Length: 311
Image (cartoon, rainbow, N blue to C red; front, side, top):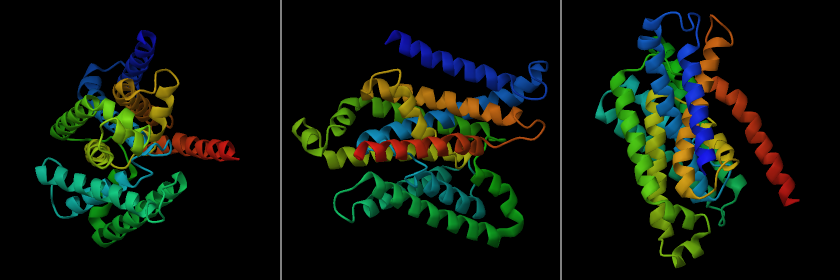
């Protein structure tokens, strides 16, 4: 287990160094590193940790390896709430903003879950299709609102695309605190998450209330996602890819998965954001685009592998 921790921590350290060095000036200007790259690296670490944690919780409680805040509609719900807050003049530093974004994430997630269970027994495909439908509808609402806003829509569009640009330090601090608390609370209930992974009936016999635990873990995953969205907008596939990569190097127990997924997600997104800054210098590719280019083929590979396993 010690080697596994060392691998994750080494990847995180390498991603941080890459992020601090990436850019036209590289390491030649200390002021650029201190005032521009360091805050952005901290923002990427917080967003990646929140999305990685949320992905691990969703996959654990739903027993679905295709689960992810982006695919389930959680990120879309949080982003839609954030956009309407911006249009209403509510700043990101306001407590009302964080409350609205959480409500949007939680509502979208439970609506996707409810849609997937309408046919009776929930399937992997049904959950994915429900999430895609909810995400598409919310994205259409966002585009409609931005079209009506016109002159104010351009700056908000960068947020919707998903990127780590100039963010208030207060927002990063509050979001980081929320994600840290969510990780701590989830870790304190790792036994319940392991029980949920065995199925609802076995979880009940092990002393866990499946309905209650599902609500708790959904709330924690949605809070972590909403905190990440508050910083970086819609960034997908971090929560999908991270748990699968972590399972290759560590045990699947929630006791190790929860902290490892948070650290792994932080490393992945920090590296992706840094790569977006150097691939097409002097132009910059948003982190959300980089993750989509890497995550979409990964998602298709998962679908193909699961389809082959059922034949």
